[in-house]
Length: 119
Image (cartoon, rainbow, N blue to C red; front, top):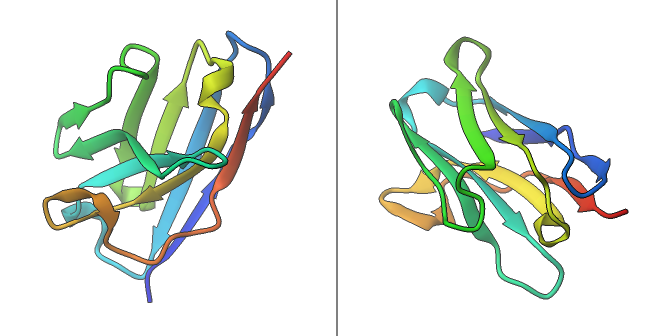
């Protein structure tokens, strides 16, 4: 049973930074692409960062502000978030994509970590 545990969220002022972590247990972590997703109240979950090998991808809404990275030795994926905006407020999750479909998660979703950007 694969378990995803996200951490590092919190309350931050606009323009601030946070670094999220996600530990993956119960699977061969290194062979899978990984993504960070977020879900704001009343909205669908959306992909905000993906990493496949050495390649990364981001939607325009976070490009230049968010950076995804991974440490395969620690079974951990990170999301560095800079220049945060109020619209970044959401619960953040990590998961591997379901095959080539980045809209779906491969494993059961974790509890997520809340990020709130507010002055």
